[in-house]
Length: 223
Image (cartoon, rainbow, N blue to C red; front, side, top):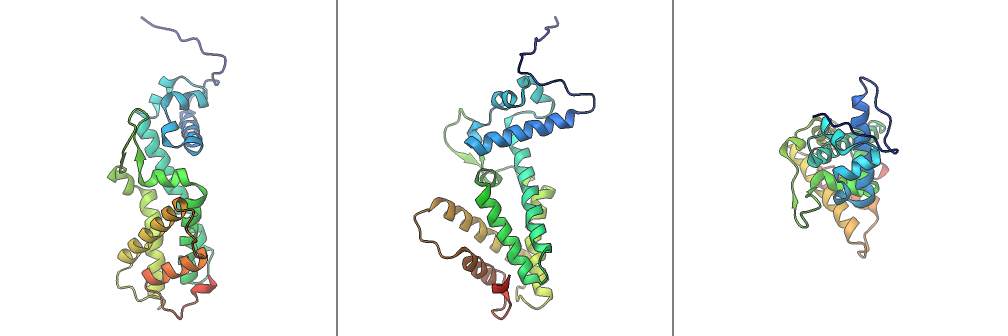
């Protein structure tokens, strides 16, 4: 038996043929708005559908479940971070300045988009599961956007090595150390508001200089 659904007055107009990708983007935009406003627990299929103006069942043409939406938001955020760090690095003339600029852009994203940043590293459980976090799927770290973000750091450190500004013997490992420190600093600074943190620029310069094995004679303070 075929059941005909009568659209509520608030429903959006039906997409034209070939515009399915637009609906997918609208779903992601709505879910991102919910995330920013209320955290991961605010994202439910019903809430997303209401925001977009579609039936909840319409979401299944693009996403299997809520978890798939969260993964897509995280992948999109990785892309935005990779592009932001890349732009900051290419705007600098010297390799040390480029590396510091990329790290600065990383911290700026974490500060300006805390909900998105948190989602990159911990995917919240559903609203009915009140406690606990689980790590993102391994494939998320192996995605093109996630790898690109990390390799911006690797390439930045390698450029410093190649030009004689760094003594690092392994740019990959040094990049992991820098990333770990950036992540820890961003998280602590966001949560320990009563701590009298030192100047961020000086902290960033010190962090990068130490973990990327930069020479003290390099012009890191000018970046």
